[in-house]
Image 1: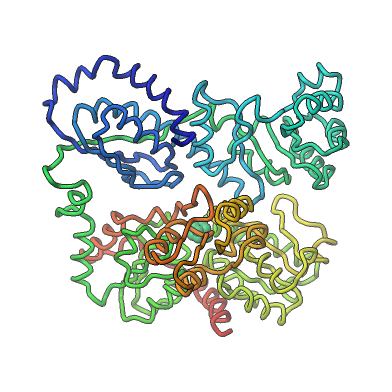
Image 2: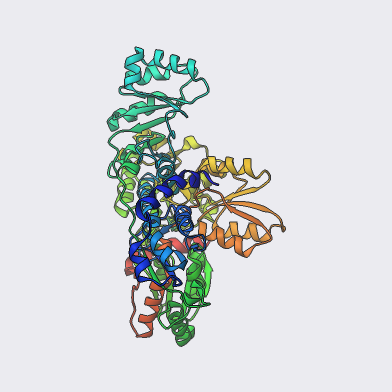
Length: 639
Ligand code: SF4
């Protein structure tokens, strides 16, 4: 039995005794003994799911004949209304177990959801979000598991598996050095962390040999944390703690600390709103079959409208889309490739099942009379949103001021994962667009044209590409929006990188590669270049989504792959290449939440509107922006 279920078992016993006790009086009196029910556990709010194995264990503890089928993965983001799991079996048992199962699932999903918010807030930095021991008594293993499902990492589990020397210990032992000496003498086998309150205490902690495993900066101001990062000079990892809120965490991470511990993840839990609706189990009809039919089924509506519109309609499905959506796509691919395929058709209506910037590219390239629609206008891109036109313009102005003419010195390059406004910015300033597949040639062309490059919004793609071309890290400058670099730093830079990152690919860590190497010797690790440099350096191969698909498809049968990219694509590769062993690189595989906003339901709504002659969720780009953005795209396509 897993550690999670071992820890959950006594809690489940306690909860069932508390809630069901001698029996569910209402269900036993209102339901026939032989009545069978099926239930659908549905998310009523967006969030991250954690605790499905525990919920299943609750149902099975109440009645082992209950069938539990998870419809999403642990750690997966869901949208409001999304089906999370289905259960079927004896009605009385199902209803008796419902509350307890949901209580576990809601609490754990609430922790995972809040953790993901913190993880996303620091995704453009290298900081890791940690939990604390501020957990519900008895629930520590469950709470900490949920933090991992949210993308956070665990601090020590208890007082026995790591030493944290805090102010009370230091004061009692007579100082940091004696406290550490005593702790190490008695427990040399345990990692040790020391809490410091001032820079003077930090210096004392840094003077200890051998170096400490970690230093905790307790309740320090941002300025002091920045100084602490400079003082430690990479010697010991630093953890920030105290007064960490969602509003402050990005600023704290920007100081350069390695970890940030957040008590609120587990001490201030807001349960994720989930509900279970039941219906009589139709004899001999499985849940999946029952769901697939019927006039209200979105699949039926999509099929009818697709047939009615024929070649007037083309549906595009990005590789990171849900399986049930991509099943309807006329073209499947990555963003630029999809747009180019669509505009070559005679279709009047292009329904882009992807995120907003992708639909914008299709709108920019569309022929007169072609309309681009997206099932959810709010489906954005975390990475694209890290670079607003105003912020990029402010950085450009700063470069201009230092070098006396940014346009003579810098070629601006925007990754295609950016707003149309930034593509237009590049078009106006002699720059161009790149994709993850052609970033190398684009960078080379840019550097042949002008001596320097301003690359946005993805720092990792820019850094990984420039390094591959042999440009040393010392010639790259990471722009800091809060504290713009000095004139001297700008003058030294050949490649200026915008501090953006994708919150999906950023979640792959070097530890994931190490764990795969240990568990599966000989397995090839292939990652997307939006991953950090540390991950790309450890991988066997890095390349665009198209490159990853091509490599896996072309490999001999029996090849083993750990794939570091969005999870829906990884699982689809698994299904489509059963002759290979394919696993996600991370233990909690990351999903793109905004891609997940596109559902069968909202796709059907857009098509239904088309069927009625309405353009729902039309994506438009104003003529001037489209003109300049197209120039930047065409410069890339001309390469
Ligand atoms: S995977 Fe990352 S870059 Fe791609 S759409 Fe999602 S957030 Fe944006």
